[in-house]
Image (tube, rainbow, N blue to C red):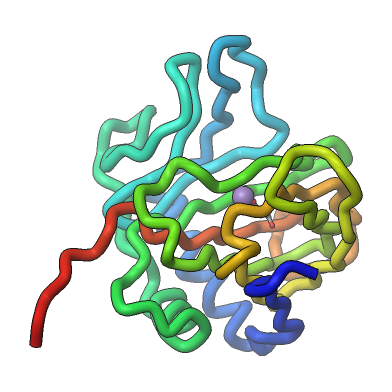
Length: 206
Ligand SMILES: O=C(O)CCC(=O)C(=O)O
Ligand SMILES: [Mn+2]
């Protein structure tokens, strides 16, 4: 297993998960889910996405990038919820806050995410933190090169996962979501929050 890969089952209690869903509903009311498309091919993603934080990750025919506004509404992304920022501080100990909280919605049998690396950031020193809510999923961790064997990890609602150190640039994806395994989300499905520092924090000397 790559150093810096960490899974923390039950990181969020049942009540913390329920409170977070309320916060996320507020975010989605302001910044609705939309279905991104792949660069060049324009093929639709099987997941829907939105973001919170100063920068949102997005994909369209022009490519992958971060931007400060929602691609459909043109509005700035809503702020990252306080408990999510607290989880970042507690679990990563990183010296600067995350700038992006990507919110992925997996709904239906076909929703998954192919193997990829999170590589659109300037700052690879900061780990990536993910929080899972709702239906159970199978996460696949590969190595830092494409292809080769993968190890599967089950992510239940409330699980936190960290890609730091050697694992920061590891290939990973979601091969399967077990629909109907959780009743946390009223419409069913799975939500994943992926927190990333995008820009390099400035070096402030105390
Ligand atoms: O849904 C997940 O657990 C992983 C999401 C992910 O890897 C990403 O959005 O970059
Ligand atoms: Mn990823």
